[in-house]
Picture 1: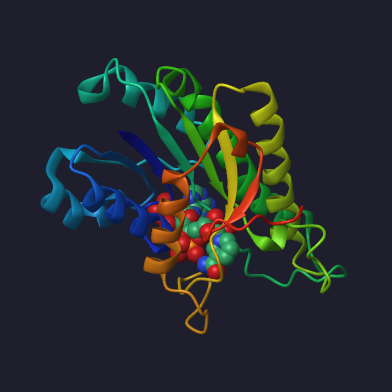
Picture 2: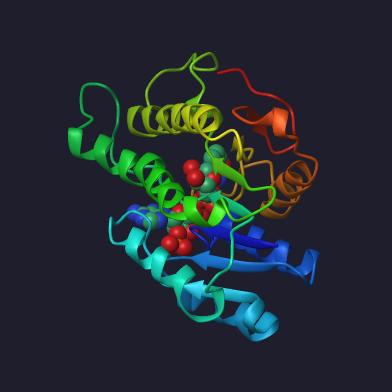
Length: 232
Ligand SMILES: NC(=O)c1ccc[n+]([C@@H]2O[C@H](COP(=O)([O-])OP(=O)(O)OC[C@H]3O[C@@H](n4cnc5c(N)ncnc54)[C@H](OP(=O)(O)O)[C@@H]3O)[C@@H](O)[C@H]2O)c1
């Protein structure tokens, strides 16, 4: 299976890269990262089953770079079975309503929404070559409108809610592709912090298990990392 994961150098993304490589010797992982050099240890361990590409999915140039990846070298003629849009950011500046700037909102959308949109657009021709293509985008419970009782976090919440809507429209427009959004849990990463209750290993292995059991009828849905449905 060919699997492409964005934001792959640390946190949940890196853990998923490692688990897919360990899980099945037929898995090949294409890891996109602004810090692809941080994946060298995995490259040494797994050889050419890991393609670590220095691509920043928050830049428009990523589209041409992804095309080049699939149209030359070892991926030439290959399809893509699973795309995981994992790259994400939680803007660090104050984002209460009075102080949040449009620039900060823009930063959230650039990574959390547009990067996933752009990567999926770039990967579409290769997803179409797969017998059972899947797109899983890592959103957040904070992108759920019905779960929002505490307000604030405008940049993060708005950009993840927009990612959820992207996924829904894409699932309607492309019934041949199973497209879902995942809340990975509150996870111990640079973003989640050390007091988060869930480890990266638990979050990633939960999502891998859900992906394994995914049905076509799940397309357009919102799940947590244990496979429980989440309300919009
Ligand atoms: N941790 C949590 O509790 C939690 C909860 C809900 C949702 N999530 C979501 O889970 C996903 C993974 O988060 P994480 O916790 O693993 O966070 P993390 O450790 O901060 O990693 C985020 C990844 O996103 C990529 N990224 C960050 N800024 C970027 C930019 N400007 N352009 C392109 N890529 C950028 C980085 O990729 P490279 O440097 O490798 O390119 C990085 O590896 C995110 O979508 C996040 O919103 C996390």
